[in-house]
Length: 129
Image (tube, rainbow, N blue to C red; front, side, top):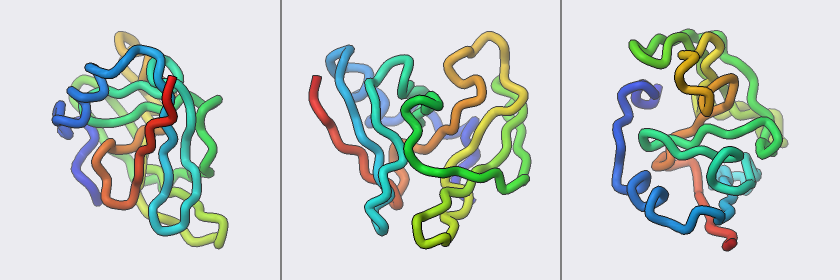
């Protein structure tokens, strides 16, 4: 399984994302299949936080299914790992996670699928303003 989402830390990619213009758009793809996982404006639609992207339901294009493997973060609370279901029916295990009992002080993570910004199976494309 990838690193625990709670402990991923603020990486260089996240610092870059925060330095970009406020209203730019990105597309997140699965590298091997080309499947678009998410597309939207960085901000409330796709929120970068601690080296991860938290994706609002309206911007989510890929199909994720819960793996029912739970996790716990000391300050974000309870989450479940999510598998990406590819068009072929194959599952990319534990590619994301979803906080199903989130911290009420962090509304941008509530019930959103999250993926790491620096995952080898993902490609992030800038789409411009």
